[in-house]
Amino acid sequence: MVKYTKERLLKNPMIVHISNCGLEITYSPIYKAYINQVFTHTTHGGAPRREVVAQELFPKKFLLDKAVIYKKLSKNDLQLLDKEIIQQSKWKIEGLVVRSVSCEQYTTNSSHLCNYCKEVQDDQVFKV
Image (cartoon, rainbow, N blue to C red; front, side, top):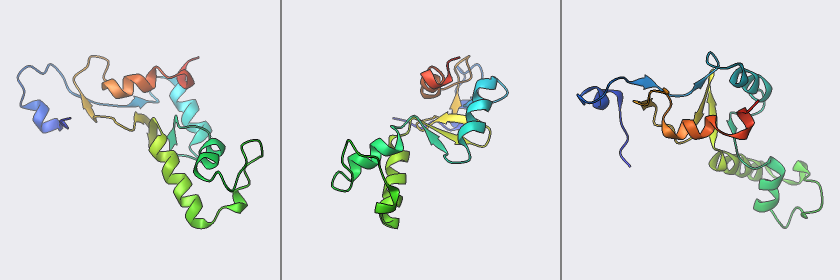
């Protein structure tokens, strides 16, 4: 897949407009509420719950029918868990913008969202 830069897009005479991509809080109070709710403890979203990922990563430490006790995990285990959650995430929070982890950064779509961010916008989390 070709990564498009702003400069490369500007050279294309067929481009009508270019816009930075992302779901900004100025467009909808839903994104602002989401960021306010989760930003203190995460910068990514759309991954399975932390407990589910922990049970998948460390099946010998956690039984599926028991609660996950994070004290059982070493510092390295916790770092691995965090990396895995980021890997499985669908979106990330950058400042006051929610973006797909696959965001193309710039778009020529009239919606001002790349196709990946459009998928994030359509996620159930952001439905009223």
